[in-house]
Length: 76
Length: 205
View 1 (cartoon, rainbow over the protein chains, first blue to last red):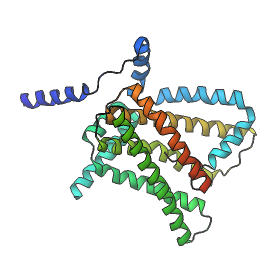
View 2 (view 1 turned 30 degrees about the horizontal axis):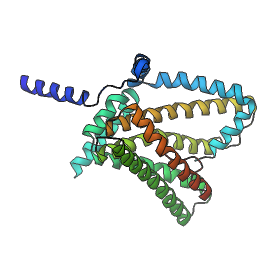
View 3 (view 1 turned 120 degrees about the horizontal axis):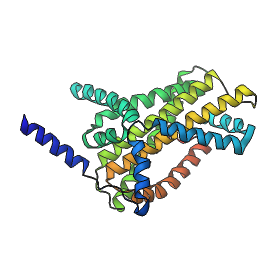
View 4 (view 1 turned 180 degrees about the horizontal axis):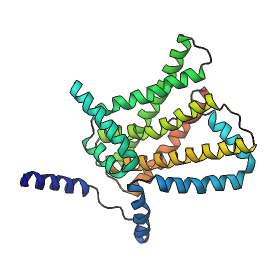
């Protein structure tokens, strides 16, 4: 049992360390902070980002936003 | 064989939940331990959408037209999937990717989940609330909600695509950007072709 647990742990460890951590120079801490929120239940982040994007689109396009939605709705 | 299929369906359902709650960990599991059998329930999901799209697009219930439409859509989707997987694999290897093709095939297949969700919702909405949208309050409200929904699915797709490349090819962000720079124009060209042929107006990537 003890050996099984040890082997499982080692396998898991190898799997986790298989890919080297992502670094992007001086902004690595910012990148880590951003991606941390996307690893588990990322939908709250998507919701916030989408609200911002829709707000910007509404501000830029105004009522003509409906014509773009019409295009998208016919896009399938 | 049937045991493998049952295990694959179970893994598929578990992974579908994982894609929402824990995409990072789930993708690691998919790429390292996933079975190609899991593509079967995914194909059934995509086929279900294609059947619905054929029914919506073909106004009349004529089996010949429906079958023809379904086959055309299925070929377009299959070619796009093969094109993306092939390009990602070849360019990934060129930039020093270390993974295996099975990981790319499985990983990219799971990225089709948000795509199918969007296309399915759009085709069903097309029947329930057909376009065009007007700039009246209800039309505006629907438009904003539709864009919000599309945007959420787009970000989900983006994250799943990134995780596919990261885990299946074991590459860093810089190489992922290189692969994207090469792949996206090819996908755009293919999508323009599909648009001109009247098969897909929005690419089924």
